[in-house]
Length: 114
Image 1 (spheres, rainbow, N blue to C red):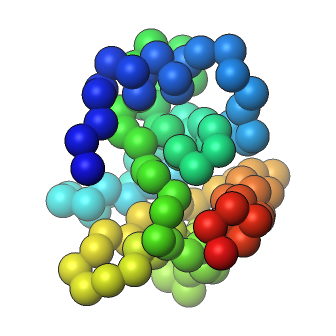
Image 2 (cartoon, rainbow, N blue to C red; image 1 turned 90 degrees about the vertical axis):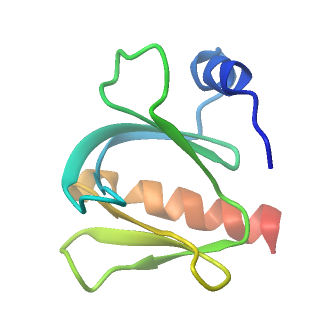
């Protein structure tokens, strides 16, 4: 799938409704370092930024063909796991106040994708 990076970045920052936003910690794919990132959930797109005031997202997770589950690795953590062999799983760690983001993602997946 090809995405137009400029359009995706514009959508991340436009005035369309935000389902949920807040800081989470995200484990990197390559170095496995956990870093704090600003997340914005809009529909089936979960954008993440280095800081809240950034003008362009670092990345986007397309929430299709995936599930959300609590992680046993870290306290207050959940994983977004994609279907299929060799697919990436995202480990996200929340402050207790942001665990509702996991609920929002799970609810979205149940309503729109199942």
